[in-house]
Structures are given as structure tokens and as C-alpha cells.
Length: 212
Image (cartoon, rainbow, N blue to C red):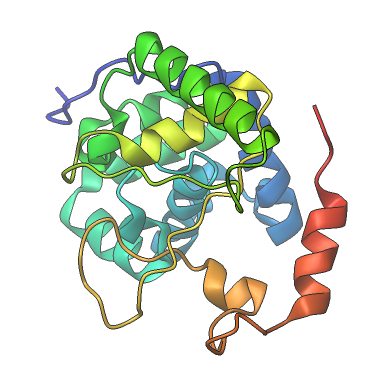
């Protein structure tokens, strides 16, 4: 009998089928889709786990998106290895996502009324900006850790709002949630005080965003 604690994961408007398609796409890119489930090595399983978690941003403990951290987790939990192997065989990863030990604090049930209130707040801010009394379209969300700020941002995309979610805290800061890997990818690792960095990369990202 498995000792892994599981529960249905609230993934909002996103479906497990959508997330599975993303995972399978990454597996094809890495050539892992052609592997036999029985012949997957520990490193292969760690890479698959990292892909599953990276495809479901903010719902899982970010440290396990690192293959080395994922490998250490798998060494201590052989049952998790078998769960990933079985999911890989079935090409369906919902059962892995439902393993509670992998969840982040933001994976708790999300209340739609929280989003309703925030969307109305953004609309009100936009009306005020249009009246010419403000100089920038931005606002702050201030609350204690674990109260759902990150989840709020991720869920916002389901209201036809473009969301580029990145945690850009200092690399020396070990607070929670951990800094995203995005700074290195998007060229902001060595950004100066005026925010000048890899402008061509930033422009490419903006051009790639499609309006809903």
C-alpha cells in the first residue's frame, strides 16, 4: 500500500489534460518520450518530475523543478519513483500532481471571489488612470507569506489578462518563494539601475505574447 498522501489538486480553470500536453511536448523535445518506462534511470525520472512541476507553475515547491533536488527527493521516496514511472507509461500525470508532498503553499483551494474582487479593483484603477490623475499603471499587493499572492497572479490569466509571472528577488535571498530562474533566461541577471539589459530578448518575448 502506498504511503504517499494524495488529494485532488485544485488547478483552477486549467485541466490536467492541458498540463499533460505541455509535459509530453517537453518530453519529446528532450527525446525522453521514446524511452521504455521500465528502463528509465533515476536521472530520467528526476528530469520528468522537474518537467511536470515546471509545467504547473506556482502550484508546486519550486525547488523540485531543479533536477538535482528532484533526484534527491526520489532517492528518499522509491514509491514516488514508481508513481512517475506509471504516469509516464500511461502518458497521464494527474496522479503525480495529486501527491501532496510536492505542493507549494499556493496550491490550496482558490476562492473565486478573491479573483472577482481583484479584477474589479484593477478595472477601477484603470478608470482612474484614464482620468489623468496618475502617471503609471501599477499597484502593489501586500500581505503575509502563504496567503495566496502568487496564486492570485497565476489565476489572473484566466480572466483574459496577460500575465508574465516572475519572482526577481536577489539571488542571495533565500526567502520563500524562491527566486525564479527567469532572470538568467530573460537577460536581467546583470540589469543595471535603469533596467537596461537584454532589450532584444525582452522585445522578442513581448512580440510573442498573443492577446486572448
